[in-house]
Length: 172
Image (tube, rainbow, N blue to C red; front, side, top):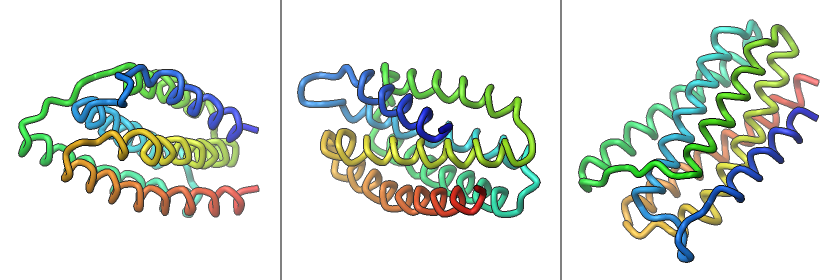
């Protein structure tokens, strides 16, 4: 049930807060959304590393921190190279608000309850972010290098989603 609630909330957040021009978000807005999404997953992974005692959950959380930090470093290098200033927007702000609320709920949990809730949130979060990458961010990106980075991210984050789904099934 936690996964369903997180998925519905995240999907509603992304769908409802994408208040961009008719042709979609701009590259600076896309850069901010993508970087924010990665940063939020890094924070969630670090929380899991602090709280979880489950070796599989800890391994997954380490992977989230490592991979999202690597993608965010590439994103920062790209925006610096292109001279683009990422532009805060309703979607990135909404993602942050939602993640703050989720982190506060997760922080109150311990043991297996934490592990299940963290992994369920990761399934929902990756599903939502991957959907946004496919349907809004990649199609709207105008710069070829940004589009390529987003596509690489989608490939990696789709693997994260599968890993989270497998891990979630093992925690039942």
